[in-house]
Image: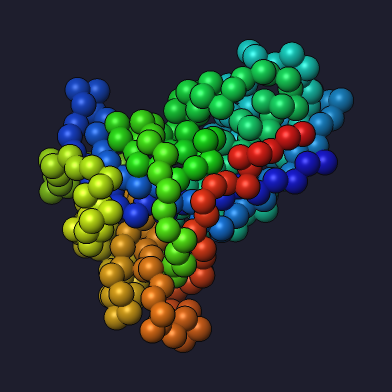
Length: 275
């Protein structure tokens, strides 16, 4: 049995800079990996079936772990059955990339178990078919992202701590994207501009999320007492960077919803994974 971590991420900002003819949106963002982990256990079996335990709310055929396995089958030199158990710590629908991270972890592990022989770039290209956030977790490094999120420039970020709140709601990404008032023409920028003045960078989905989901607005108002609260991705989670004057325990204990204390990661623990 192989047990491996599957990290979460924060979007330190998220700008929508345009829209393609196919309906996909052009964006710019920074992906910051954090030490909030799901854990995946893989056991090879003689039975050719794929069994996934721990995500009863998701139909297996719709599960990104299952889809990642299916996408690897044409490359497998030593195919086997798999029992996969997931210990879910990253909340779903949160904007923390849990499902994408699980898919990337599966690609990395099963690529080796099945002797697929794919390198990181090839796995990332397959990952885009599963979701725009999957490549960042395949590469396992913090990045400046463009395109639909798949064009990555790897960057070094300072070590930080964050408080992350998970409001008690599930945000529909499709609903946010469908809103006519969504800002879709934010001017493209550069990483050096972010480094000079990160406070100028926002999440274009934040006003919509706050107006459509009162729980998100409540969480952001709470964190805004202590710093500049931000929405991550198109999910429900909001976060604030920790500063020296913050009374962390008080903030966590009085939160209006589930609260996490997390550390930034320079790289994913999976980056050096070997079976």
